[in-house]
Length: 84
Image (cartoon, rainbow, N blue to C red; front, side, top):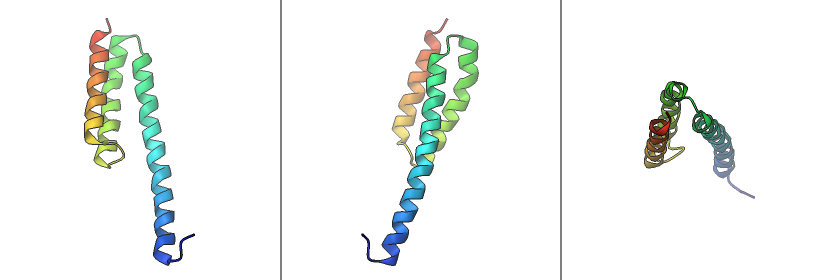
């Protein structure tokens, strides 16, 4: 167990941030899952900007790496292009 006040505070802050990050990362993953499951191209194109925005926000706040966000967006764009 931590002995310093500052380390106790750091533990509290870390737990709070971890839960916050986990919630938003999970929300983005679910949105990507919905987009991938979509069979209609128009519907997928409508969802794509919202999902990209989520990924960009996560990358901006360092929840995920910026390159990972870029890779995910690219894969989703390719998926939408294949829909017909």
